[in-house]
Image 1 (cartoon, rainbow, N blue to C red):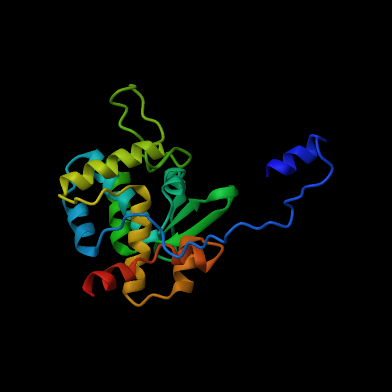
Image 2 (image 1 turned 30 degrees about the vertical axis):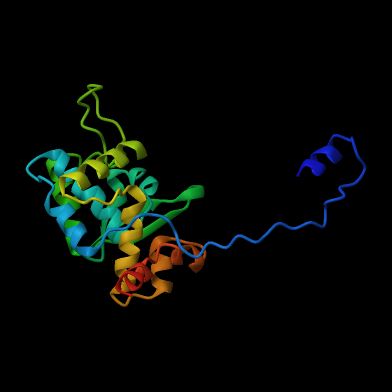
Length: 215
Protein backbone atom coordinates (compact mmCIF):
# COMPACT_ATOMS: atom_id res chain seq x y z
CA UNK A 1 0.00 0.00 0.00
CA UNK A 2 2.90 2.35 0.74
CA UNK A 3 4.47 1.67 -2.67
CA UNK A 4 1.08 2.15 -4.38
CA UNK A 5 0.85 5.54 -2.70
CA UNK A 6 4.35 6.42 -3.87
CA UNK A 7 3.48 5.41 -7.45
CA UNK A 8 0.36 7.59 -7.41
CA UNK A 9 2.44 10.47 -6.08
CA UNK A 10 4.93 9.91 -8.93
CA UNK A 11 7.78 9.34 -6.47
CA UNK A 12 8.61 5.95 -8.02
CA UNK A 13 7.63 4.43 -11.36
CA UNK A 14 6.54 0.92 -10.36
CA UNK A 15 5.45 -0.91 -7.25
CA UNK A 16 8.15 -3.50 -6.41
CA UNK A 17 5.80 -5.24 -3.96
CA UNK A 18 2.95 -5.59 -6.45
CA UNK A 19 3.12 -9.42 -6.48
CA UNK A 20 3.18 -9.75 -2.68
CA UNK A 21 0.06 -11.25 -1.10
CA UNK A 22 -0.65 -11.20 2.61
CA UNK A 23 -1.85 -14.21 4.59
CA UNK A 24 -5.46 -15.15 3.96
CA UNK A 25 -7.72 -14.40 6.89
CA UNK A 26 -10.70 -16.73 7.14
CA UNK A 27 -13.45 -16.15 9.71
CA UNK A 28 -15.68 -19.17 10.34
CA UNK A 29 -17.31 -18.10 13.59
CA UNK A 30 -18.73 -14.80 14.75
CA UNK A 31 -17.92 -13.18 18.07
CA UNK A 32 -21.40 -11.94 18.90
CA UNK A 33 -22.47 -13.25 22.35
CA UNK A 34 -25.63 -15.36 22.26
CA UNK A 35 -28.03 -16.57 24.92
CA UNK A 36 -29.98 -19.81 25.05
CA UNK A 37 -33.71 -20.40 24.77
CA UNK A 38 -34.30 -20.41 28.52
CA UNK A 39 -32.50 -17.10 28.95
CA UNK A 40 -34.56 -15.53 26.18
CA UNK A 41 -37.74 -16.69 27.87
CA UNK A 42 -36.51 -15.24 31.15
CA UNK A 43 -35.65 -11.99 29.39
CA UNK A 44 -39.09 -11.61 27.84
CA UNK A 45 -41.02 -12.71 30.92
CA UNK A 46 -39.09 -10.32 33.20
CA UNK A 47 -40.32 -7.27 31.27
CA UNK A 48 -43.13 -5.40 33.02
CA UNK A 49 -45.81 -5.22 30.35
CA UNK A 50 -48.00 -3.03 32.55
CA UNK A 51 -46.19 -0.02 31.12
CA UNK A 52 -45.91 1.32 27.57
CA UNK A 53 -42.12 1.14 27.77
CA UNK A 54 -42.31 -2.52 28.71
CA UNK A 55 -44.64 -3.33 25.82
CA UNK A 56 -42.35 -1.45 23.43
CA UNK A 57 -39.20 -3.20 24.63
CA UNK A 58 -40.82 -6.65 24.46
CA UNK A 59 -42.02 -5.98 20.90
CA UNK A 60 -38.63 -4.67 19.80
CA UNK A 61 -36.75 -7.66 21.22
CA UNK A 62 -39.37 -9.98 19.71
CA UNK A 63 -38.91 -8.59 16.19
CA UNK A 64 -35.13 -9.03 16.38
CA UNK A 65 -35.37 -12.60 17.68
CA UNK A 66 -38.21 -13.94 15.54
CA UNK A 67 -37.23 -12.31 12.22
CA UNK A 68 -33.39 -12.42 12.61
CA UNK A 69 -33.39 -8.72 11.73
CA UNK A 70 -30.60 -6.23 12.32
CA UNK A 71 -31.46 -3.65 14.93
CA UNK A 72 -30.93 -0.90 12.36
CA UNK A 73 -33.54 -2.44 10.06
CA UNK A 74 -36.02 -2.80 12.92
CA UNK A 75 -35.61 0.74 14.19
CA UNK A 76 -36.18 2.11 10.68
CA UNK A 77 -39.63 0.53 10.63
CA UNK A 78 -42.65 2.79 10.52
CA UNK A 79 -46.03 1.82 11.93
CA UNK A 80 -47.22 0.97 8.40
CA UNK A 81 -44.39 -1.56 8.04
CA UNK A 82 -46.36 -3.93 10.25
CA UNK A 83 -49.33 -5.06 8.19
CA UNK A 84 -51.74 -7.94 7.61
CA UNK A 85 -51.56 -10.16 4.57
CA UNK A 86 -53.29 -13.49 4.11
CA UNK A 87 -54.59 -13.50 7.70
CA UNK A 88 -51.06 -13.17 8.99
CA UNK A 89 -49.08 -10.27 10.32
CA UNK A 90 -46.02 -9.26 8.29
CA UNK A 91 -43.14 -6.91 8.97
CA UNK A 92 -41.29 -4.89 6.35
CA UNK A 93 -37.64 -4.39 7.24
CA UNK A 94 -35.42 -1.69 5.76
CA UNK A 95 -32.06 -3.33 5.13
CA UNK A 96 -28.73 -1.89 4.03
CA UNK A 97 -28.47 -0.22 0.64
CA UNK A 98 -32.12 0.77 0.58
CA UNK A 99 -33.30 -2.84 0.24
CA UNK A 100 -36.61 -3.91 1.75
CA UNK A 101 -37.22 -7.36 3.18
CA UNK A 102 -40.62 -8.67 4.22
CA UNK A 103 -41.05 -11.46 6.75
CA UNK A 104 -44.11 -13.12 8.31
CA UNK A 105 -44.72 -12.76 12.03
CA UNK A 106 -45.14 -15.76 14.28
CA UNK A 107 -48.33 -15.59 16.39
CA UNK A 108 -46.41 -14.63 19.53
CA UNK A 109 -44.77 -11.69 17.76
CA UNK A 110 -48.16 -10.53 16.49
CA UNK A 111 -49.40 -10.45 20.08
CA UNK A 112 -46.38 -8.38 21.14
CA UNK A 113 -46.76 -5.86 18.31
CA UNK A 114 -50.55 -5.57 18.57
CA UNK A 115 -50.38 -4.93 22.32
CA UNK A 116 -47.69 -2.27 21.93
CA UNK A 117 -49.37 -0.42 19.05
CA UNK A 118 -52.71 -0.41 20.86
CA UNK A 119 -51.20 0.90 24.09
CA UNK A 120 -49.18 3.57 22.25
CA UNK A 121 -52.27 4.57 20.22
CA UNK A 122 -50.20 4.91 17.04
CA UNK A 123 -52.15 2.62 14.70
CA UNK A 124 -53.25 5.56 12.53
CA UNK A 125 -49.79 7.09 12.32
CA UNK A 126 -48.69 4.85 9.43
CA UNK A 127 -45.74 7.06 8.44
CA UNK A 128 -44.50 7.59 11.99
CA UNK A 129 -41.74 5.55 13.62
CA UNK A 130 -42.86 2.25 15.10
CA UNK A 131 -40.35 2.16 17.92
CA UNK A 132 -40.05 5.60 19.49
CA UNK A 133 -38.68 7.07 22.70
CA UNK A 134 -40.93 8.07 25.56
CA UNK A 135 -39.97 11.73 25.27
CA UNK A 136 -39.21 11.82 28.97
CA UNK A 137 -36.08 13.96 28.56
CA UNK A 138 -36.76 15.91 25.38
CA UNK A 139 -40.48 16.41 25.82
CA UNK A 140 -41.14 14.88 22.41
CA UNK A 141 -40.99 11.27 21.25
CA UNK A 142 -38.68 10.45 18.35
CA UNK A 143 -37.36 7.36 16.58
CA UNK A 144 -35.16 5.18 18.78
CA UNK A 145 -31.48 5.00 17.85
CA UNK A 146 -29.24 1.94 17.91
CA UNK A 147 -27.64 3.31 21.07
CA UNK A 148 -31.08 3.52 22.67
CA UNK A 149 -31.64 -0.11 21.72
CA UNK A 150 -28.25 -1.16 23.09
CA UNK A 151 -28.91 0.48 26.45
CA UNK A 152 -32.36 -1.07 26.60
CA UNK A 153 -31.07 -4.59 25.88
CA UNK A 154 -28.38 -4.25 28.54
CA UNK A 155 -30.84 -2.96 31.12
CA UNK A 156 -33.39 -5.70 30.43
CA UNK A 157 -30.71 -8.40 30.49
CA UNK A 158 -29.50 -7.26 33.91
CA UNK A 159 -33.05 -7.26 35.22
CA UNK A 160 -33.49 -10.84 33.97
CA UNK A 161 -30.28 -11.95 35.71
CA UNK A 162 -28.44 -12.70 32.45
CA UNK A 163 -24.72 -12.41 33.11
CA UNK A 164 -23.63 -12.59 29.47
CA UNK A 165 -22.93 -9.11 28.14
CA UNK A 166 -25.31 -9.09 25.20
CA UNK A 167 -26.24 -6.35 22.76
CA UNK A 168 -28.55 -5.69 19.83
CA UNK A 169 -26.80 -8.15 17.51
CA UNK A 170 -27.08 -10.91 20.12
CA UNK A 171 -30.82 -11.13 19.44
CA UNK A 172 -30.14 -11.80 15.74
CA UNK A 173 -27.49 -14.42 16.50
CA UNK A 174 -29.67 -16.05 19.17
CA UNK A 175 -32.64 -16.33 16.81
CA UNK A 176 -30.59 -17.90 14.01
CA UNK A 177 -28.84 -20.34 16.35
CA UNK A 178 -32.09 -21.46 17.97
CA UNK A 179 -33.75 -21.85 14.56
CA UNK A 180 -30.92 -24.11 13.35
CA UNK A 181 -31.02 -26.10 16.61
CA UNK A 182 -34.72 -26.70 15.90
CA UNK A 183 -33.73 -28.42 12.62
CA UNK A 184 -34.22 -25.37 10.43
CA UNK A 185 -32.09 -25.25 7.29
CA UNK A 186 -29.21 -22.88 6.67
CA UNK A 187 -30.79 -21.92 3.33
CA UNK A 188 -34.02 -20.77 4.98
CA UNK A 189 -32.13 -18.99 7.73
CA UNK A 190 -30.16 -17.12 5.05
CA UNK A 191 -33.40 -16.01 3.37
CA UNK A 192 -34.99 -14.93 6.64
CA UNK A 193 -31.89 -12.98 7.67
CA UNK A 194 -31.64 -11.37 4.20
CA UNK A 195 -28.00 -12.43 3.82
CA UNK A 196 -26.51 -12.48 0.33
CA UNK A 197 -24.25 -15.43 1.18
CA UNK A 198 -24.78 -18.52 3.38
CA UNK A 199 -21.26 -17.97 4.74
CA UNK A 200 -22.49 -14.82 6.45
CA UNK A 201 -25.41 -16.72 8.02
CA UNK A 202 -23.02 -19.46 9.15
CA UNK A 203 -21.14 -16.91 11.27
CA UNK A 204 -24.26 -16.62 13.43
CA UNK A 205 -24.54 -20.38 13.96
CA UNK A 206 -23.21 -20.99 17.47
CA UNK A 207 -24.33 -24.58 17.95
CA UNK A 208 -20.72 -25.74 18.16
CA UNK A 209 -20.35 -23.75 21.37
CA UNK A 210 -22.56 -26.29 23.14
CA UNK A 211 -20.65 -29.20 21.60
CA UNK A 212 -17.35 -27.83 22.88
CA UNK A 213 -18.85 -27.24 26.33
CA UNK A 214 -20.22 -30.81 26.51
CA UNK A 215 -16.87 -32.28 25.49
